[in-house]
Length: 304
Image (spheres, rainbow, N blue to C red):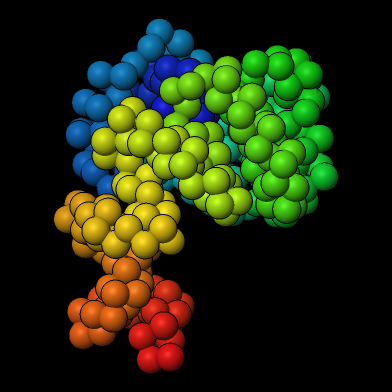
């Protein structure tokens, strides 16, 4: 799925000192096992990305960025934490550490790192947004909302923060307030697919199906590989008794990803609603290994 990246990060800073093995900091050999590749291969990759800063902090920061980009979040967190000992006054390094810890599920560590970043750079809207992410995942909704509002206070057109604020209100059941925030974010950036998708889901729950489908159609037009939009459009079609349309969307997703549990569940539901019991049971059997809870729900629908 080709979402525009919500968190915009700077180019990787890597250095000649790292390529040769900095005596006072680290070396490629010490990290090559973390990247599951030979040291020589890692050295070639790093040389391709290298910048001009040869300081120890930049070496560690570069390792962290490479690890983060390749989804080795534990390694990234270790590298960024080491970088903070060399660059303790770098808000950006503390922010990067917070993001890596967020990915590992260490919310306490993430929060500590991001508050340190904010003390060093209190007017960075992104740091408030990042803090809101860990608070939202912990269901600390009032604090998350306060973080997003602080980010919007610095930049009212900051789409990511407004989208996340809408998510907070939606999680709290404040549908109308969430709807307002999603619409405003979409007005600021009509091509921002996550908010269009969230708005469509919310409208679908509110049974405003025509507008919901219009947003999903637009999301698909913006990114034809966005499978989630097909799935949600399929569920709306099934609710409106458009079984042909629902089947088409669910089968489109399953052709691209046979292990997409919600699409297989949706197809099973659509078949069951048409009393095609044998075909529905086949989908249920296939679903069992993918998502036992959805499989049990579908089984109840088939046997009731």
